[in-house]
Image 1: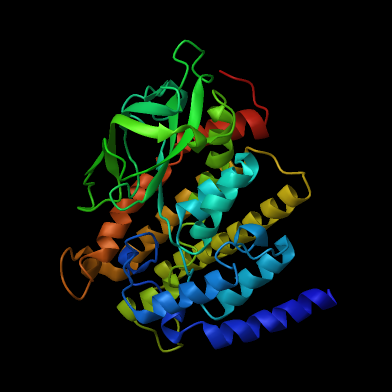
Image 2: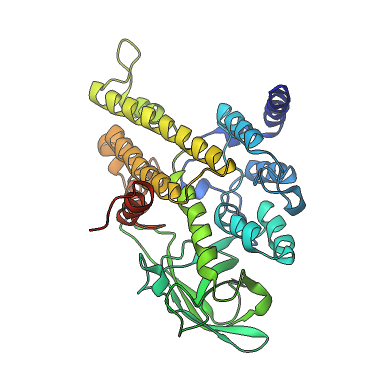
Length: 392
């Protein structure tokens, strides 16, 4: 405990000295996030300063080994880092599918060469990834995917289509599930490959949602050449890698909204305070209080799940529980933000609403219970694997 308290003191001092004041303010909108990549654009020098400082310490991926650019922190130290960042309202320095999803899969299944080649640039925010999983005919039933990779000796030739590929039009590389043995049962004969999005034959088409905006794309592969060394894991055993990655994706989705501005602060600006200094709407005040309690309990559940995993007592289906509750919680958050904003929250294009951010973000959350596996699929997994309920 003494060592941990010493680490806390050092971390607190370092964060105070290195986190720019601007990076302690709430995110204004989704465009205010830092995704990194070859074509990264920073809205302010503070964003790059914060990313560079954290990446230099490996704290964009604090629990990854230092050999691959990570921070090499223990789980307990990483928890201290997160709590100290919350104390000063420090933003995440980097949002990254490479950190949240691909990195853990590479650490588990990648070759040493793949780890050395891909992980350090991910930590530094130099490479931005997208995910090639869902297809027009393979969503919840992902194992039905038909994108095919033919063995051409020294490379794979990939043909097919993916859909709901988040930020594919902005990504540098893609981690992709392809069928390498079309004669095998559907959960077999699937492989996990990586390739550059600038490879000839790769094209994307944005999908506009009800919000008027969207990170999603259709992604097309026409005779795309993929080097053999970009196969992750065992040939035709990509489903193992896919399941491992999905666990981390669902945990990532469950954390959505955790770094957003306090609901109470948002409501206070819109509604004002009564004579006692309380939010001047008792019903909304009670709803926000219930939400804050549930959000705190959920944060503790995430920490407990991580502790169970470290003790090798975790259950793979716990990620489905976190994903389901986190998605529903984020939808509640945005419902309350709309309620707090009243008619002003319905603004769609004004400068005051930053281009209709509240309304567009609220509509965007409707996808939370679909992406990463629908809420219905998560409830089925929870029922069967956690509660051991009989099938219908």
